[in-house]
Image (tube, rainbow, N blue to C red):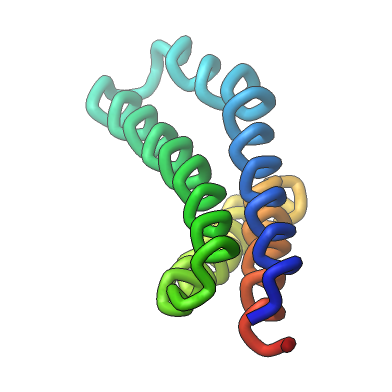
Length: 125
């Protein structure tokens, strides 16, 4: 595995966490909570899902760093890469379904970049 690319994936994971938490929080989570028209269960389930992503992006950075320090844990990179490719594609599909350019959702490109770094770390020596 390419350790430098794993560190790059860890760094981009931290960037993803920061964008999600500190930019997305005020622009997405706060308006979601302020919305009085959503059914209460929908509002709070969406807020719960928001925090699942917060936790995942935080753990993702730590997991890539762990593998960079313990290069025998290849399966962790494989799992993260599968998840990140899936999240990037899901982000694009949801955006398209909403008639929105997929790259208006930072998750499309951020998860895409992290997944590419993960893939490259696996295939390059």
